[in-house]
Image 1 (tube, rainbow, N blue to C red):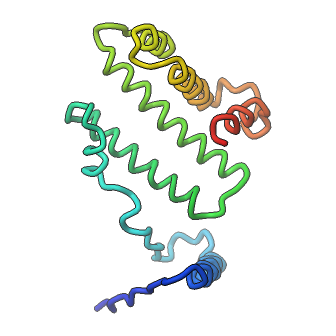
Image 2 (cartoon, one colour):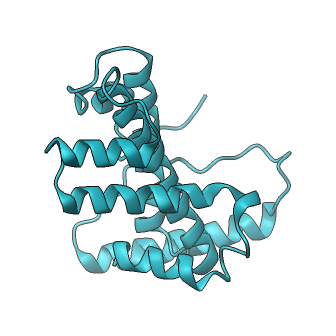
Image 3 (cartoon, rainbow, N blue to C red):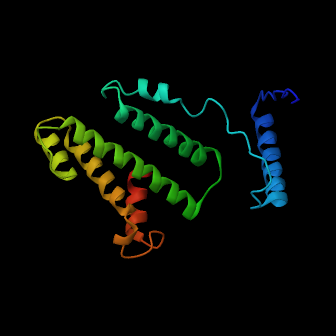
Amino acid sequence: MTKARKKLVIDNDLELKLAVQRVDELLEAIHDYAGTDFSKDWKIRFPRGYVRSADQQRARLPFLPYGDLKSNFAYTLMLSDTLHWLLMRTDVTSTLREQIIKLYIFLFGSMAESLTLVSLKGRCGKKYNHRIQYMCDHKMIDEAQKDDLEWLWKIRNKMHLFLLDQSDYQSERLRKDFSVKLS
C-alpha cells in the first residue's frame, strides 16, 4: 500500500527559493547516503509535463510525413526537452554544461541532415553542405539560414572524437564556436 503524495504548492518567489534550497539539501543527503551504490532501489521523480509526449512532438512536425522518421524526430525532441530541463533547472557548469550543449547541437545537426535529405530527395542528394548551398541557390533558405546550418554542421561534425586534434575542452576554437552562436 502506497501513501498518497501531498502536493506541495509554491505561491511566491520566496517559497520557491526555500523549496529549491530544501531540494538541494535532500539531493545531497540522498547522494551522500547512496552515492554510486545502484543496488539501492530509489529514483527521483522527474517533473511530469515538462517533456512533451511523442504525440505532442509529432504534432509539431506537420511538414514530415507520418512514419518512422517523424517518430524518430519526436523521440529526439523529447530528449532535447530533457536536456533543456537539465541545462535550465540544474547548476551544471563548465565541462559538463559544454558537453550537454554539444549533445544538443549533435541532435539538431542530425535532424537538419535528415530534413535536407528528405526534402531534397530526387533533386540534390549530395553531401550536406552541397544540399544547403542548393537550398540557398533555389531560395528555399536565405544566406543567414545557410550560414547557421553550415555552422550547425561544422559543430555537429566535431562529435567524431577520433577526428579531433585536441581535447574539446581545451579547444579554444570549439569554445569560441559555441559562445558565438549560443550567447
